[in-house]
Length: 462
Image (cartoon, rainbow, N blue to C red):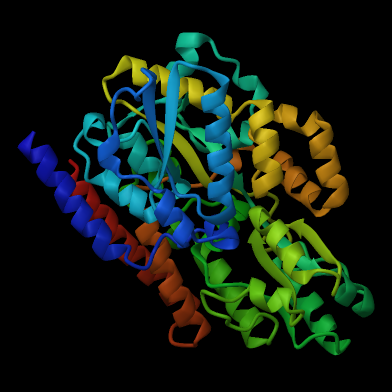
């Protein structure tokens, strides 16, 4: 036991050191980072995790990282659930950024130590949660009840399924899109690019037509690397991209995937097609009408449409590949829900009951309409509310089509050091764009540093 606790403490120290600036999530960033006073006021102390509420209901503590209007949507769903039955009382507790919640979980030696019954963890924490011993996999609940998962989106389930077992329930899921200024494209007489190769040609035509000096603005963000690797059909890590077991090393330098991406990205920057806008740029330049294209999450659609207003028409298209010959799909981002194995059967039963409520057609219709995240339940697509949403914002149909055109096999990598990997990649992407290192050497350095993080983690967690 001492060894286990000591190992977890060592892991937490390594995690905090390596991820002080990591874990940026396009979804939570796109809508709200959750750093407002309302969230601070509504967050309750974790020490109040009593087994029962004052009226005898079993209390289910739900940790989440949804800020701003997303926090409002969570509160609404929790209130609706609490009114719908008289056996359980769900208490939602805002935990700050995704990284903050995962750091707390990493310090727990067992499910009994967590202080919550249900936790929202972003996709970068998937491999850790699977290996942590803290959870009761969703598959156990599903098998015990013979719950019908055919009503849920296959490609959302696929990301969190390992060895045929669903470990967590998809909740706030999204994919990246290419957003473009339809007015600029029509004036220049160009088609939407389907690859970075095409983007270079389209960008040159946009500049020649005089409609913009910045054809595309996209941020320095590791998620784009993940998606471009998926599009190429290439793995980031060994052990079947981390899905068979936690990786022992990276493979992206060996297969050349990241070098391909960095070469294309640097070429676009050098040609003035995609100037370096850093980690914080991208959508701001697009929304202001400065750039003609940008990359952003599907969950950013509502905000982008709101900020652009009627100044120009926003178009959406599939996230591009690196080369014209790349034919694979995209992987999801966002977060999912994990049931903590607390040893309390009644609380775990209540947790499962609440999860079923959250993925019901009614709850997912509300969630999708108020957040922009994909509806987990397929039945939402047949509701009048969803049809009205598509009529109002037809751009969202692109997101649904892209999700359905991807395959379960397109779902991306898993690794316990995924957050650290993102930070390492972003550092070297900027070095490439600033001309400080070649794409080939940057790929090698990324691999070396990520492999060192993997070795450190695996040594501590033998």
